[in-house]
Image (tube, rainbow, N blue to C red; front, side, top):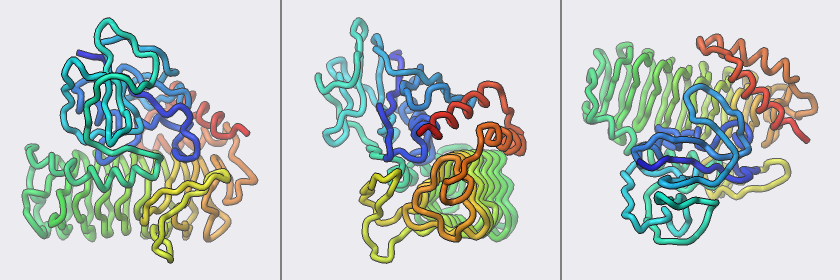
Length: 390
């Protein structure tokens, strides 16, 4: 079997804010699955390494090592971390040397006896299905594109069926409970997609889930109207949530609207935090990051929240806001459209110290019984160092 390596963007830059320099792009969710997991499923192979300088030393305990880009000896496949395969199996014939998507090269096949020295445009190609990701904002596009089929795949999984006392609109076979606890009165609207509840999920009375929706292991849904979204493990969510990606371990435990947004690990949204996801002009949304303007081409786009970001109660976020890693957003009802990494307050004039950030992270992780190992501490220390340079 060929080894699998995932190549990160050489310099993620503003397009991948607020995740560049914080976590590998391959460890972000595109639909239900992380980009790495999508490549692994398509090729039926485990990832040997993630190759990228921007997130060297990253450690959460379940990912392959991250190392600088280097040559790779075959047999191997190098997949682009900025491409999310659809999930269809890839079985290239011996002549294929590149995977392409709509003319863009998104992977390289290296036969035994050959060496890959870096990205190239040579050799026979195989067109593959999936979503090309121009930046973090396209994780919302990937969600819209991939989530329906991702959820529908679970229809074949053994499950406990419709929880007692639930109300189902649509085909009951599209309610998939894999060990969830669901209080009576929860509404499952599966007329437009499957709802999947993983092991250890808790869904409380007063919740309406409109598929496609995926709720990851250990997540608690505390009430509200939730549609077209994915929640990684151990989240706490309530209120109105639409077309959003919660990567994992995030808190939105109160009312407030989050739409067409990406919420990183260990984010905490204060009560009443609300994102705007549509401009008054109904025009395309632009992002502004460190003075650089990015055209997303999207009409609906909320907020991109970096890992460990936090908002105060009542925070109102403009369409296309970027809240960087570790930022503590308070002091203004409507923050600026870009909040700097580890900002203490909206304007970023003050910042958390490294020791202060690590102390808070240790406390937060302990609330989910996640060990603050030396490796994780060092990973976060390096994230702080990279994100506060300059």
